[in-house]
Length: 297
Image 1: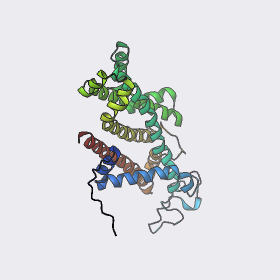
Image 2 (image 1 turned 90 degrees about the vertical axis):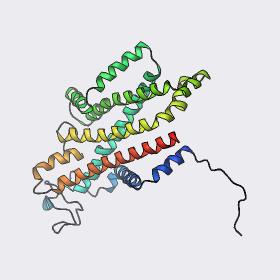
Image 3 (image 1 turned 30 degrees about the vertical axis):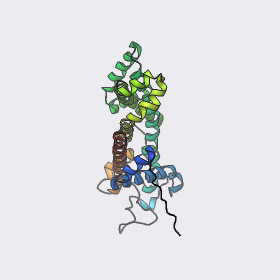
Image 4 (image 1 turned 120 degrees about the horizontal axis):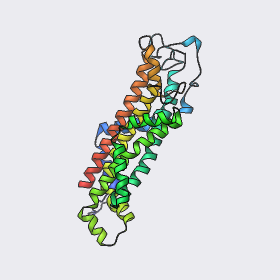
């Protein structure tokens, strides 16, 4: 006999549940999320998934088309480049530098930028306001140009590129966090909490942070897209990660001379880069909408 509940129970889902329900309503958002999660998993396990070494050359399979074409070989699913290196292996390992490294750079720059921006947004003393003006000046310089300046000083290489892009993103997080915190600090609900004796750390973490989360989420996704494009552009120009490291931007640059003979060597890394950045932007925008709807509801 089925159990019958005679009493009405009011359902009060958690904030995270509400955000997930609103996010889950959009098919495009879920598709982009699954694609992005799949890309991250591929990056994590790419050393195990790559069938060959990225530097291994096959003299008998130079500029071999992908396996789904008539001239292709199932041994090389996505073909080979002009040196006979497996494209699938290079794309998989290249994701470590083109997606995994930008995630780490954005994580580092966001932690530093949000902490400094929150302190500047709350403390209105001359010392912190002078520091704020310095970061505003740095913000007037585009992140890619700032990264170029830092690389010109430090030189090329993996570590220098990662440091340059991380430093160039910090002023953006400081600016966005400072403005968001300062705007919320003037509102009545924060003033009431201050009059109740709440400390500044409590106000920032428990009172202000939940209301500025959509802004920070949007900045995180934008910064991740910028970091991916910057590292690819620097490598494309020969100033970033150097060959033979398989980074998607450097793979695009190398395929320019072979675009008519082996177009797949340019299409595959370019398409991977495009789909990755698009999925990040879709997920970020959908998450920002879901968070904003929860805050305004």
